[in-house]
Image (tube, rainbow, N blue to C red):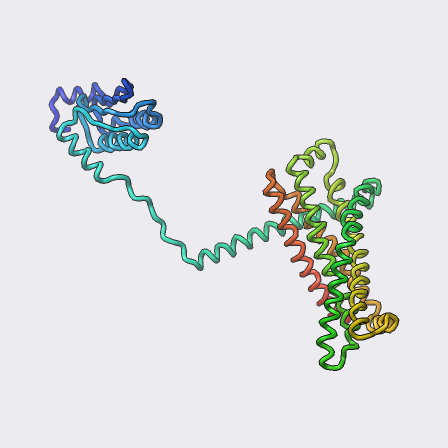
Length: 390
């Protein structure tokens, strides 16, 4: 500034930074004029950014600097950036009227290039593992809280239904009993029959080494009536009916049918959740009973062929091996497992968002959670019955 003449200082004050741009014969001409120093470049900087973003149909660009009265490093950075962006758009860029000082500034700024991106140091592996564990724990805590609230809402709905039985939807209840119970009967019977036969065959082979193959009947009866019959049935129902509950309610949520119910004054808890929970709570003990019988039948068939034990002797040995609570333990656990499977499946369905991918993800999640909780619940019941000597 100190080296400027009074005329140059007047030109600097009178002529702020400006430019003219136009396209002729597919050539973009950009003529800069005035004082291109840092204090005057804010306006033209934004305009040049917009110009470069849409240069039109030009295939060549000419940047003229002959009318520039002052040109500093900031101006050189803006002009260099403009030229680089035009070249990225496919234009060939040329300069006109560039003085020696302007040329030196443009070369210096161009040699610096774009600033290096900031590179963050890699996160140590142990911190990544701890972060994943923390995220998982937070997600589990949030899901547990949401599940607890959902269970509370179901309990409130049950209380309202007991106070006013006419609220209970009998037709959906019977429908879901058929879908989750009667329709699952062939699969439950087949699998428990086969598992009973396999357990009997393996048990007989192992016990024969000790001359105690007669106790194969005790093995089959106790294992199936206390644990295996119920667990197999619960896992089958979780994979079949629990996933169906999630998919059905999730599809309704995705199509906004549940919102339509609320608009019509219908409570989705009464219409959708309670009939499914009640139906599965009733049908799982019945399926467990049939599974126990089929497991004993499968084991008896193997015992008949491998040990040459008549059906009458087999039934007598079963009666001697088991007591009331051996059979009752499985039936006592069944309603609790049924409630867990139904609640997890319905809760996952209500958590579906507006995409088909979400339906699939929540269906998979509900099956995994149901089976996990069923096994945990079975372990807790096993410890409880052992503690009370049952």
